[in-house]
Image (cartoon, rainbow, N blue to C red; front, side, top):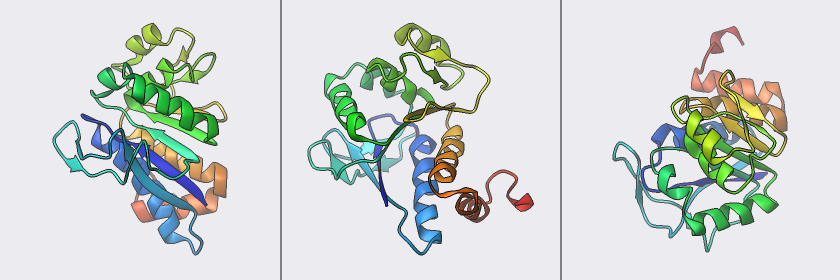
Length: 195
């Protein structure tokens, strides 16, 4: 079983974290064995509001969360502040050191870039953030023509809904296409009828 920790912060983009949450949770739900334990983490454990106002209550704070095998760093306008927050950056560095996979969704790539995780690696982000990512993470190889990138441990996805694609890619990588297809069919995602 993999512990999936999803980072939440003020002005996070809702689907950036809800999409991966759904993919990993549904994959566990549909299979006899618990494949993923999914939880959310914020700096202080207090409630956060997403970009459009939906309020979420994180499961844990930076100080009390379980070990994280897969770290999900979503985007949203709140990344403009988060990628400059030393507490956030230190936490990302510490968790990333022990995680098996670190993935960003959308402008969450800003945060990975700020701690050097994208140096020398291919990365994607929301199309409106690509120029800024090139400025703030000059060591990253920022692409404009991919839905997601897989550099082994560090993975990035494009804007908002692309986080679902990357999460499904991770499910496939860890458990195979058959398990991923069950999730795709249940979610009626993409070309699910052809599976």
